[in-house]
Length: 212
Image (cartoon, rainbow, N blue to C red):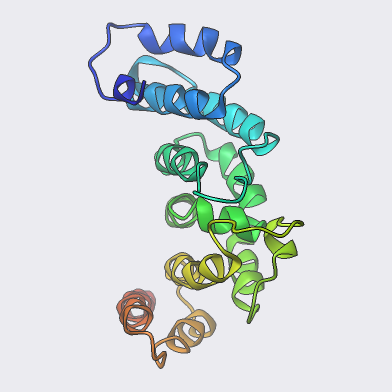
């Protein structure tokens, strides 16, 4: 079924998929079909509104937090994340803001919030980022894991990756405060994080210079 998203389909196929997608119970199948609608978005007006609706259904499913073992929900998040990064309906940024208040979704929709911040600059993003970056550790409960087991992604991984996402988001809000926050990671012993911070610190400096 995954190939469906990449093959050329006749005009109107996406609208047919959208008409029948709710008949599928599998969130994996629904995710692939949702991505197929995104891939043919030029043929389907309001595709982004419908994908947010489908994502909300996914949020309420047992797939949202994959059971212990391989992360079987990762590809579903990835498909929605890619699609959300291209949405055009401005009002949907509030859905992305809502989702990103959860550290799990802040991490799993890693492309979405930075794109929202770059395109529309909603002021809520800064507060969300600072709230997440203020944490020095993330517990299992913070990411919705109430039972023991080998879950993926781990809270530690979510915490590590959230710093990269937060830095990317803050680069769209040039200010001394945000520059200082980004630079606080430039002293990291983690090479990739240090380089990421230095890259986005330069972006913020350049934007601040343009504002003068």
